[in-house]
Amino acid sequence: MTRTPEELRYTEQHEWVRRTSPTAVRVGITDYAQSQLGDVVFVQLPEVDADVTVGDSIAEVESTKSVSDIYAPLTGKVVAVNEDLVQTPETLNEDPYDEGWLFELAFDDETTLDSALGELLDAAGYQGVIGG
Image (cartoon, rainbow, N blue to C red; front, side):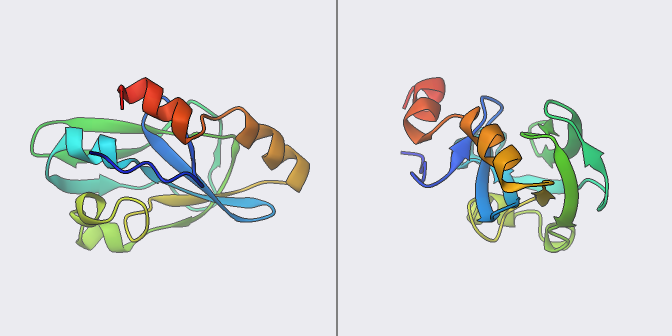
């Protein structure tokens, strides 16, 4: 059974979004996504300070089975990336919701972020996508 934490928001592209401050979020791939990928061997992260638009392919995760694009779940600015994944990409398999985060996005204001998060799936909605 894959874990789908209730406090997170999700995309149909199997990314999770956790609010970390009134105007910022942390993003990663879901437990379901890492289980489908298999052993992750390489991660390409977005550039810090890059402005990204929802739906843009901004990162890549390579496993022993395939290469998968990571899409921006929201429109914002990349303010941090998880450099540890460059050296230890397997962290995505071991701890996708905590140590295995990919990048952080910042927004101009709280209202913009509230609205954007409202467009994403809740845990039950994501379970419906993956048939859980």
